[in-house]
Amino acid sequence: MDELKPSPPNSSPLTPLGFLERAATVYGDCPSVIYNDTTYTWSQTHSRCLRVASSLASAGIGRGYVVSVVAPNVPAMYELHFAVPMCGAVLNNINTRLDARTVSVLLRHGDSKLIFVDAQSRALVLEALSLFPPSSDRPLLVLIADDDAVDELGNQLTSSSSSSGNVGFWCTYESLVEKGNPDFQWIRPASEWDPMILNYTSGTTSAPKGVVHCHRGIFSIAVDTLVDWAVPKQPVYLWTLPMFHVNGWSFPWGLAAVGGTSICLRKFDAAAIYHLIRRHSVTHMCGAPVVLNMLSSGADAEPLKHPVKIMTAGAPPPAAVLFRTESLGFEVIHGYGLTETAGVVVSCAWKPQWNRLPAGERAQLKARQGVRTVAMTEVEVVDLESGAPVRRDGSTLGEIVLRGGCVMLGYLKDPEGTAKCMRGGWFYTGDVGVMHPDGYLEIKDRSKDVIISGGENVSSVEVESVLYGQPAVNEVAVVARPDEFWGETPCAFVSLKANRGGQQAPPTEKEIVEYCRSRMPHYMVPKTVVFKEELPKTSTGKIQKHLLREIAKQMGPPSSRISRM
Image (tube, rainbow, N blue to C red; front, side, top):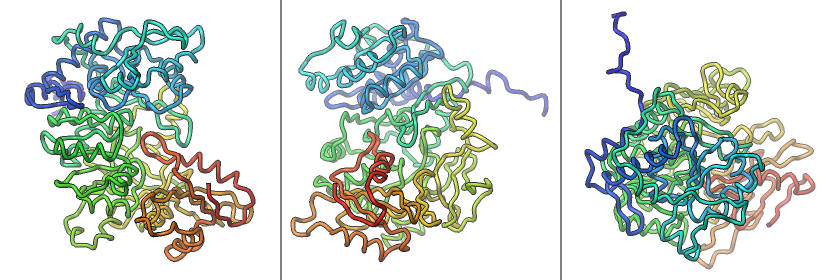
């Protein structure tokens, strides 16, 4: 058989862009995108993406060029996941809640040639461009505007110039659609390893890094997620997860593969989410644990009339939050992934016999991250020093490492950073976890969040999970606070629920500590409790522990104390 070799008929480069062509053929008259009172079919979405790709190619945007997008979950944002790489360019979504300085750094680092700007982010991007060095080439600007955005701006769109650096917009998004060629022959990748996506890490623990993914990797994660979650044909998907966050865990492409309907949502609001679930009979949605917490503990929480499947990832979800969410009728699947894997690559594969367990035990099992998805090659937990696999006892801590087809190509312009995390055939995640006897992974912390108190390793996630069981607690984050005697001690930042029935007094500091003391080893009990109205979070729902660590460092003497802020 040695004479049988790869040939053009059997070695076409894998790319998720072909999903759109198929969707236009199979689901042409079915709804693809719904936003307020606007509905597009798959035939229309296919045509609109080709038109935008054609217009970009006519403007000289082609292979290897980076095109950035600063926009929320609106139809244009969905379409650009296809249109930008269809002209050969690399798509770069930017978090809309970053400050202008950070946006400026990312645009320059990625050498962005063109930026699609939502009208509500216009001032942010113009300020970011004003921070460019005078000699720098500035990217073209394309304005994305819809009725909601225009209304909030008082019907004032942009002019040809601005007071922020004399920067003007080249055109509007819809003008690119209007003048583009619907029969455009989109640019297929020369190799499936060609770069397709540039995403920047959130930067909650360190400086942002540019993560580059290829067509093959995005194809793999998009199909893998559909299989692992058992997504049926033509689901109705509500966009509660920002598409700028790891490309919405690769669901823009996955939904095209199954002919799903995207319900776009500009702003996250619990009342709006419940309304859209009822109005459109939503079947699937995704979100970080903070989304689950808001949906299950707010004033708008209400039992669903039909089950809704929701995937959560991004941070370990507390068992108490999972229990509350499922009691409303949501069917939660829990997974784990990173920007560097383009989506969820570990999921808590559910076993039918677990359904016979008490609700509390089911929630504890579901809180574990689980096992590798079918497209991942291997996932392991290794000793932090030796690199050898840890004991599968559910308690021995180690670093989570993995390998598979959807791991990034590397960090843009950062060979040292790439080599540091990709070595010995593994991608080192920087996350700390344990492996249970049944082969299920459970995250315990980020490596920087492990608290070393008197020589004992304290998992901040474990302490948080206990505190989430306290009925009055809304959100909690535990970080290390320097201590002259112990080295570090746990410091808990807590926000309380706003509505506790009107009769129950908020828990005292002593009650919080005693609650923990009765449920965990004493060395793990927070020595400091800080009450805050709201914990600082990124736009993707991750609590910004680096900010809380700075507060903890500045809190005065190392003796145990409780405080309010």
